[in-house]
Image (cartoon, rainbow, N blue to C red):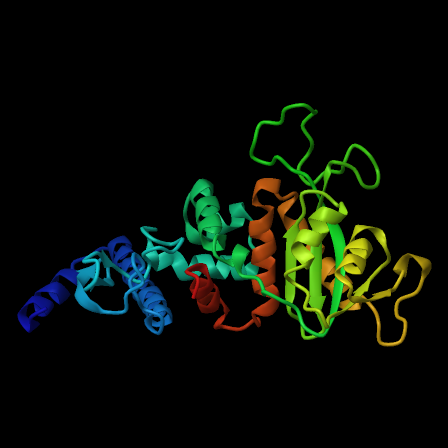
Length: 315
């Protein structure tokens, strides 16, 4: 902007009412936050920048659109920006992205997130799951050393959907039957002593389902600790791995160096964190598991929202 135009702008600012000045301040803050979000996104994608269409690294700058630098691929001729091919592509209101990441860091419910972001609850819900699309698949390929494995169960929920075949249940309620039943969704959690953690929503608790997730996860020299036999014990036996059973239900919490306290502690933190949502829709359960994994491994700090924003674009 030319100096003359800037002076004219300042003259107009002096004529604004108090409400209009506040509106200008709010817009400038949103614009500043949008610029910060864009800088974070482009910085995170800079090192691995290549064409998302063909993978070619021969790219050139090709103008700016919506505040984002655009690029053109010399191989296929297509254009793109840092968000192309990510869950946040074409998502609007970049000025609120860091606030959305903060809402995730704070574990806000949809209602509280909507109030925090000053958007409709439907928008807060949609943004939540756009931001969680990438974290749900961020899992370690393998564990190392001593691995602790155990199952936990989450009540099946059709929250947000029309229930067919049974009476509607109060959100966050209890199952019709005590103990394990078809209403309980099994979640297998595996964690090694370094803190590397992964989890899987199982189709059922039988050995075949457990074997399918453990076989690529556990190396041949892994030492596995569980709370007993069952399908997990059978799968470990078939894999030929060293297995130590610590039956906590009998009052035994450790046998020498062998225990499952790390994975049980993770279960407790997960269940306590999920309680605020008063039931998690089974259709979105993997998103919530990915959300908690991200929080559990990301230190609580002023940088956490920026880290979660980068995670949302797969950086």
